[in-house]
Image (cartoon, rainbow, N blue to C red):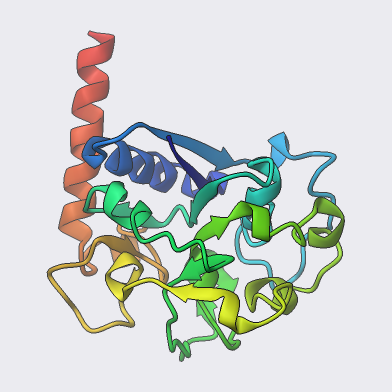
Length: 227
């Protein structure tokens, strides 16, 4: 079983649904998908919302190892994404020598505000934490007690690891940053980090046609099920 946790924000509920569908529609092995819904994490994630926190899942992602019982591997990804390849091919990249694995972007945003008028933060390792393969047993530092008090930079810059040497590298096609990375036709996992096609101002962005096609396919399936 491939265990996937997806960041959830009710303002982007449609994004979560389309991403989850896009994963399942292409998967050649069983996949279990868990949305990280804050209302379901009461008593576990107790930290107050930070003024620079742009989404509900800014910190909940770091509970993935805890919610996995610190066993096996789990994948985490933000909801504003679209899977265009079998997730098994991402899963095969797991390397037991690593505590976590991520796409090591060199990403310095130019804007100060992103979608939903939320602040755009700039920091080293920006967007590394938007797709993570967690080797859960080696991430025991991410206990709820720590996640609730650690700073954003401590968490997103993986300072809870003993060394950056424990961060393995994933090919960048598994976290293609629309609007930042040069356009490419072979992205495996598309990340609408500036704003997804479900927002009017981004409805014509790169990979928007693919997102709308995926949404329509999902709705057709839903219609057949309810008919």
